[in-house]
Length: 243
Image 1 (cartoon, rainbow, N blue to C red):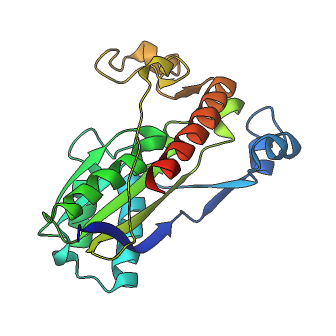
Image 2 (spheres, one colour):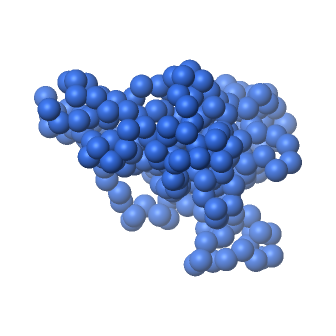
Image 3 (cartoon, rainbow, N blue to C red):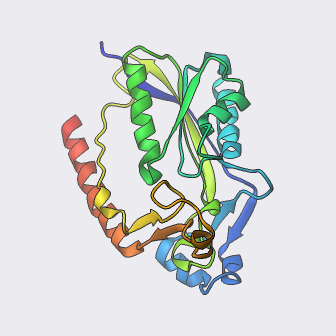
């Protein structure tokens, strides 16, 4: 029977500091009722302190996962970290996490796909399991969004926080696990959700920093409508395909 990848463990981690709606009221022109009625969000967690990057979040999530599943870190074959807020451009945040948890026999890399990142990484990891190339793969989704959020922009700062989770993938021949996936990308929406500067197209300069172009820009209503419509459609399609 064909091998499938199955999630055998899940662990999440968030920082201690709570940024609630009342505190946001002191930072930007908004209020608890406005935020709650539009998003349902009451609070978000923020990673505080010097030299605290996404690897801190990912490391905590993976350590908890290894402990929960009683897994030896040296038995891990591959670690993939889905993040748009890496500690640095390179080395990969996954490399740092692997070193922190003692996954000495694992190779590791990051993928950057924003909200889709964890699903893409999960699909990639499952293929390595299905082919028999690897026995144990860890997939991480983690972000320190507070590092790229403009706390003068009430349309974005109310939404995002910091946190992450990790799952362990292993093989099974039972009729369960990750059955299939259906992934799509539409690059035509770049104008509606982006970070303008900091990449090779527009490297960081004094002017780009002053213009606050290193923070998330989002045209919320457009992104919301696109996501709701297309996520519903693809959910229906994958269910029909696998029934």
